[in-house]
Image 1: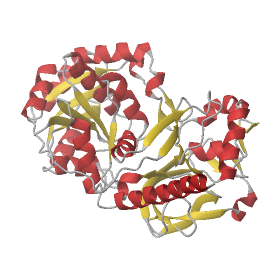
Image 2: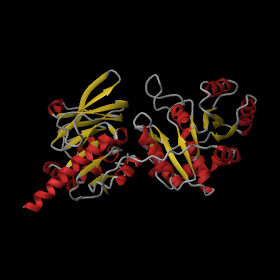
Image 3: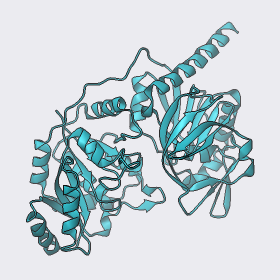
Image 4: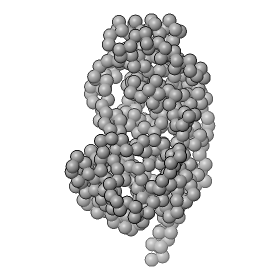
Length: 457
């Protein structure tokens, strides 16, 4: 059995992340080793967990992950830890489609863990009571054990609400004061990354701890118990492939469960920085994830030696997989605030940063003919979230090897030139482990064939 709890809210923007970080920090300072998780596809919240808990945060997504992979991910994440703390996604019952697939409530019922509801109390008195009661009574199989009130103006404000809430038989587990120090800071994709943490935020989290009912929260964790399923992924062999992953301030949208998956199957991981490195050698797979390349456009554009080397690798047929921010980087240029920055140029289209959101949501990815990395006929799940768009007319001339489906819409994407693929989709490999293994088999066959030719020559 594993102890833990889930932090949820009625909607986004009500203080889940601050409450989660404060509870994680409170536990860590008491010597309790926390396994941190985030429900949904968010890359950013998990980057903050690592700074508080000392281990990378992981994502849990029952829409984008096969059930076996989700259980394996939990099992790997809790190894050597004392408890798990899970931050929910959006509102408690919000998910994909009418069945709320991937919602916090769905996972709470599956894991049978207690839930703390974080409620924004600013400007509220009596009206907050039916809101809380409704969320607790809507589905009694979701075990909401108490609430934390956010944006409280004074102790008097909190005590007044606490008395009313506890008269309904619901526990109040503390509050978060209404202070600017508790703002993590936002940009177009959400909160700022963990490596951009401010001393103000750290001080704010310590302040929040003073207003939490620590004994009640510790008691709730202690009384919890989630049955841990001893599950492993199928493994017939190791894959000693060289995978080079872009990772720096510009490219940081990495799922740690992907890194763990690579290690589990024997891939040899090497990180490189498109901002600082010049020569990266020749990998079996070059993986450029998402991030904020637009914030570092000038620095990326000025690293001409690496840009030349990346073009050389692409021309030689090295397999390259670029996602979202990676697509921006491999384009010919990026237009931002009326300035144009030259990018790598493997794909001959321009990207323009927009002020409004261009795409958001889950998507199914069906692999089409001539895809150089994945196997035709396989399908994966992923998500898109971007403020940029392709602005060139000649994009129609580029081969596309993904068919994307979302609800009743479908269209081709997955721009492919030689063995390079660029897409706005962040694919989750845990959505199809068999397809992921077929991808590794294909890359191993290429590696072995190339090595054999070299030995023959």
